[in-house]
Image 1: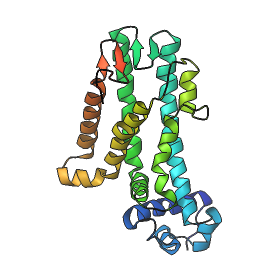
Image 2 (image 1 turned 90 degrees about the vertical axis):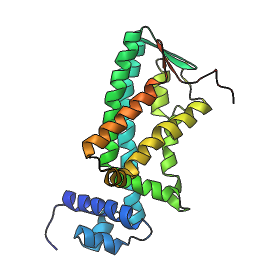
Image 3 (image 1 turned 90 degrees about the horizontal axis):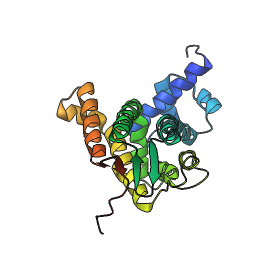
Image 4 (image 1 turned 30 degrees about the horizontal axis):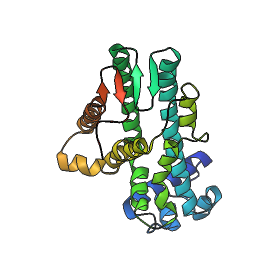
Length: 240
């Protein structure tokens, strides 16, 4: 084996694991397979990770933590900033802005945030693909994808909820909002990342064309929630 630094060895192990887990599946991948693909000694893997499971735990935690950091940055710079400066008031069923210009500014910021999110999930699509596969099984990681719902609950332990309610206590995560966010906001992005390569091959679109098309569609969907100076969080005119 060639001599490599500890940082490089760890990165090789993680990258090899991503590729193997997403292609062969987590269960079908052995530690020996990872060692061979990473061109490292098997003992070195156990030096950095307790087990194959520990490698996947590390990847999942890193993915979620970075996604939350991106979201928190957007919330601090946009939602919190606009509330503190009197441009935005959160009401139980809507985000109410002082003017259509404030809505337009917020929408521009949302578009930039969506671009960051899409670039992030494309870059990490192998891990997301693994999460999708594991969510359909009965193993330990079947609920890893649903850990995203931890950030859609009204709890002091939820940094997203706490950050917003600290500046506007009217903010709530209703059952409808949680369902909408998970199935119509988070899962479409997850699916886009998981099927990115297959869709690109089937559609013959370039990376840039596919990325821009998804962002345009997302923007159209989000824009449909705008009503005057409000962004609706719930449509009270629809009866179920």
